[in-house]
Image (tube, rainbow, N blue to C red):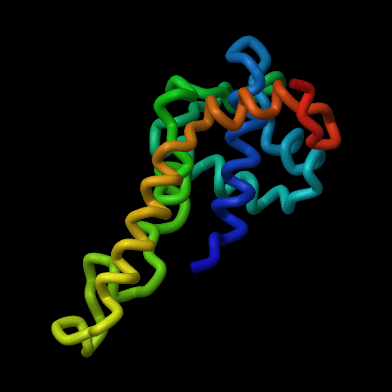
Length: 145
């Protein structure tokens, strides 16, 4: 399983928005410029997040995006599944089981267990956890505590 750039960039964008305020919304241009991300791709990601109800937009010249939900309620898994699709190590672990070996697969239990642990870990990490981690480090990622 490899996460997509869409999920990675989406998490970066959401962290940037969450670290701002509703009085000073963050624009797609600000995010794409700060992190050298393709602006059209950032706009597409932000639109998808807006449709999900996690963020909203303030139109106009001084507009931009701001967080609607509490960062403690947004898990990394939720974000990934909004932007991409349900997480699965293998396609046979999704609801559309396409594997011809499904009924007799000797490794299925292993992959289901590992897949479950990954989902569990991503559920445990919230946007707030990531924001707190940023506060506890210097710009070079070194812990200040």
